Image (cartoon, rainbow, N blue to C red; front, side, top):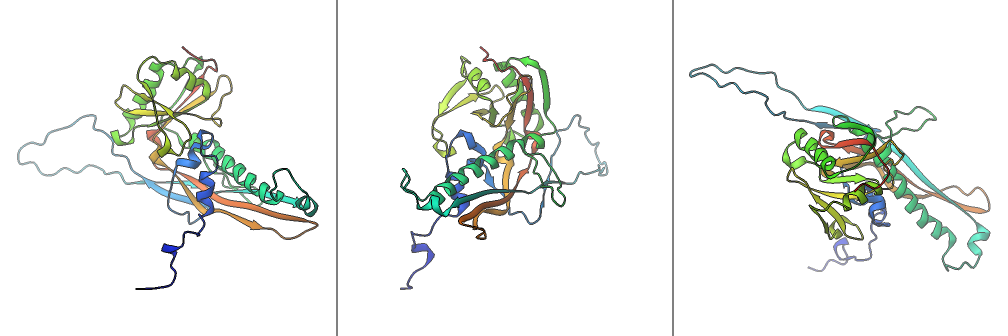
Length: 306
């Protein structure tokens, strides 16, 4: 039946800003912004969710024939939360600058908006890893806990200058394997480039995969660990690289999600002079659904091992 026009038939509808933001420079520099799943919309500046873990038994007692049922205390899901953080990327360009003939042939205001979007993506990426939880008060910003702050179960401080070896990587994977069921074992190792280069020197169990499905622009290295789980190696510029505190994270990617109180949007700001003003704004947080699946180790040397 003829209808006229519906959204199903309109190929000119633009992507939402979050989709565009996730596609800006889709590389390992901003891995989490490009790849983390989007969780339920945040309904408050304190975003909450529940987690539950079924512990493995340490001993088992059989029941005798005809025995009455014996009831043990049962554990309930526990509530976790994170704060939302507000990020802005302001842009201001004078009227005169917009009238100039520039080499790019592009309106300087439009150019600066595009660059601001890239900066916002990098800022969000940094917070996803390094954000610190802060409740905030009048005049003081709220802060969201990033991956580093979310991990609380499997943390090891290695002796300063410890080399990153194949044994070390398998010990990290073993730690994740001990803590969770097989479907939640870490599948992503996030590390400084020096550690990635050390892993590249391993003579066995490494291979490269086409990473198109991971929104990356090149092949990535995968290590087939001794616990039967392959882990993708992602070098990251926002991981700590200071000597004595070089940090490595083994994560299960599916256990982290982004939740938005306000997805990124552009707003024009009031005219306050002979210039144009505007800013990108977003308010979001990180969900950590099973931090016990993740492993954090610090203290590695900055030199390339192997």
